[in-house]
Image (cartoon, rainbow, N blue to C red; front, side):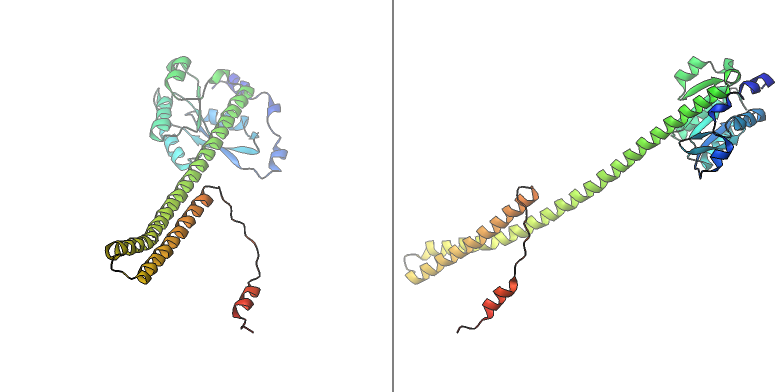
Length: 280
């Protein structure tokens, strides 16, 4: 990098927070990975963004001097928000292969990748933008401090928005999972309840059937008193079955929201006294 490039990278100080003001806040940090094989590039980048603050958070800069070293840094820091990436390092396409590694091997779609090259002939802008999943393309010789500020800010804003959306998505999936489990449990309870209800309904229904068949078979030789007794039993079993059906319908109405329970206070003491009071 020439002295002229360094000077281009060090103008427009008004865009960055003063050191004193930044130190007054307890700030989290955006992790930014700088991948370049030139030491000067790392130093100039750190100088240019030394007082940078976005959304109340400063930058924590992580350095890598090759694509291979960058892979290690990415494994050590899975929450890197933005990568400033050179193209030509240990090979002429080392940076481009790192992009493929990040997107395909790591399956990281969130980190913002800014390609910054001093040799655009090895990576023509239009070809690279179309072929590789990068978020910006910058020429080192044209990247002033003001432009670098804009590029980094746009990248961090995009990253922040994507993380927020992902957080909402995960929360929604969690709620859907919880709700699904609740519905499964309710369905199990309903099936258990219906099984119990069916059993309870079968008893009076069997009794009615038995009494009716007995009357049909022995009516001609059965005393009238016995007929009356059996018909009374049929009536009793019918009432029991009717009450069970009414209860089932009430439960269904409550679950469907068509009926609401109204809780009221009652003095049970009076009823108890009346029940236990000896006849006078």
